Image (cartoon, rainbow, N blue to C red; front, side, top):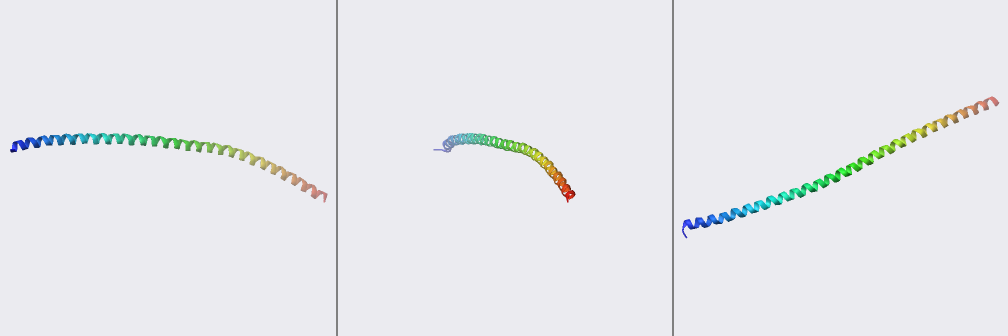
Length: 104
């Protein structure tokens, strides 16, 4: 085998190697693109779950705030009624004490 034959053989071998490298490179690029797509879909799902959970927390917080507002109103009304009742008792006691002092 002379040098020219050796060169042709080596050139043919390198063409095959270059072709395999290109094929492997393309397979690797497709693999990473597929994995990137899977990862993006996964994080899209996770983000949607987090949004749904956040909305549940916000809804719960709002309903709790509304319930507290109702309780505050009821408490204020009860407090007002109690104050009126205590004032009434105070007036009655004062009247009784005045009657006791005039009888003595």
